[in-house]
Picture 1: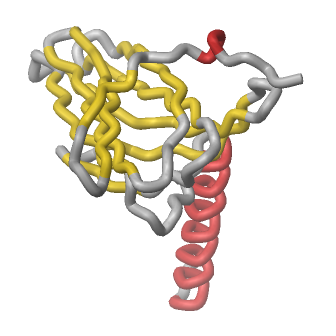
Picture 2: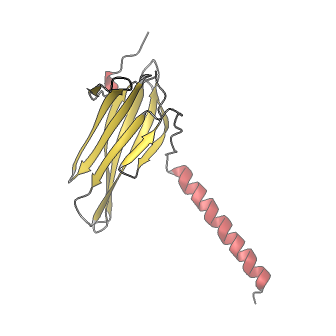
Picture 3: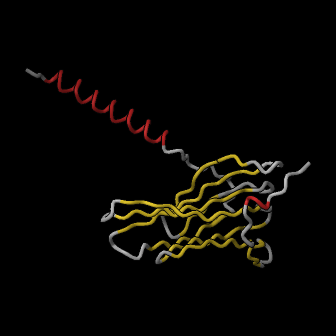
Length: 168
């Protein structure tokens, strides 16, 4: 026998269990949202096409700060879900940006990830345009620095973390 009171208790337990599972799975994912600065100085333009209706590709950026000894600290992840994503990254300190292209195939029940990483130091008075592309199994990311006053642009070369030189 189940009465209205038992049904309500069952729903509350189901809700609590669902909430607990959600919190647990979110905590285990290893990613957290990036806490952006108020100065929206970085714009990501994203073009992601898997090339097949049987697969999908998602792009995201994992932001890490870099200290004087070239050690990184994970700051958070920015999902690149639309064609343009605007965010703020503090200036004056090096950042290690890892663009992750995560693909999955529905037919083969498989998934894979490809990363493109670079290090740069955002400067005050400049905006950064980062073009992220994954089209037909070809991926790339480019970083351009744009002077806010003159609008002069320059492409920043890819700088791997192993080129970081510790101070001291």
